[in-house]
Image (cartoon, rainbow, N blue to C red; front, side):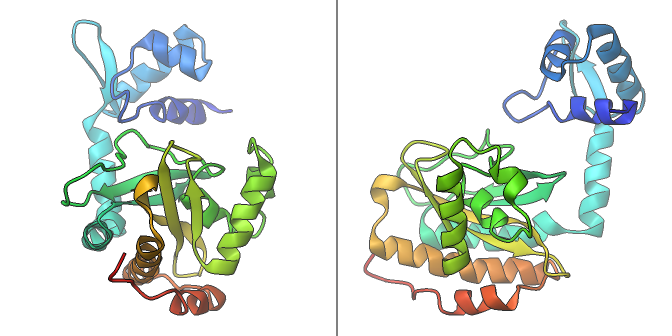
Length: 256
């Protein structure tokens, strides 16, 4: 791996759970020796991509990252365009809605929204990356890939994942129960770009004990509508076979 790749891998270690990291932590997590890690971080710091803070001189992401993120969002306003739909999905279902994108072969959380209704909510703050093998979002994306086998091959339970993928292809939406988090019932649909290629997923995460047939039907109906809307806002095209499945999705049940 080249120097640029190693430096970018170091940036990838920062997360919502660990927004600040010391040099020893970075070296240990990356497998890069401490001297090399210090040199790479110094280069990143000189470009404003990281900065050191506090008496321990820990690193955190720098202001240059914000500038790059703003430029990207201005050119391709994915998050801002999707947020009204995401918030509406959370409100109409009464559950947590979240949006993810494929970034460098991984499924990265882009945004999430919580319902204003009282009660237990599935929290998303620490879910920076969603595992393909354990989430409804992951299965929804894998079902749209021409060759998902390399990602299936690393799953702890390949047969269970293949079953989820097959069900997603049959239904138009993916489903998991207590695979990523205990007592969480996830439902997800894929999202697409202008070439009909899957670029991520839209999902609803609900407390599993609260799921009823009526709520399940309501969520799948809202999800397919919201998935089509966000894909359209992004200038995307839904494959014909999937569009037919979404049109045939169950109607919302007011007696959920």
